[in-house]
Image 1 (tube, rainbow, N blue to C red):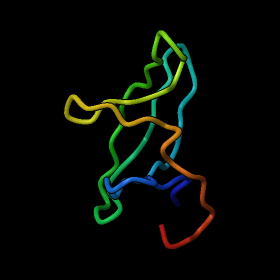
Image 2: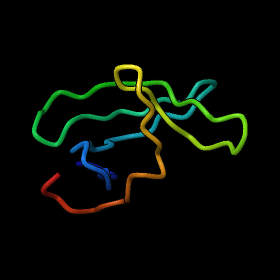
Image 3: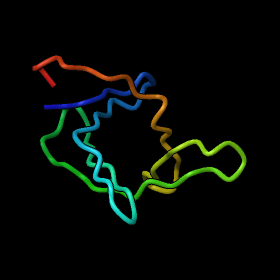
Image 4: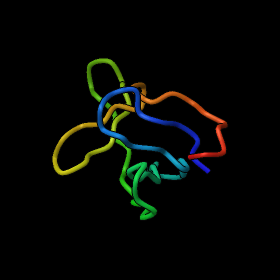
Length: 71
C-alpha cells in the first residue's frame, strides 16, 4: 500500500522510507507494480529532502500522505 502520492504530474507513489545510516525511499509509478529504491539526499541550503530519478530531483515535500487502499 502506498504511503504517499505525488502532487505534481509525475504519477509517482512512495511505498516506504527506510531509515539507517543512509536513508532510502521505496517508490514506483502508480501505473506499474515495480518498486524502486533510491537514496535520500538533503539540500545544503535548506535541508530539503529529495531523491533522484534519472538525474532529476523529486522532493519528498511534493508528496502527500494517503491511506487510500487503491494505491
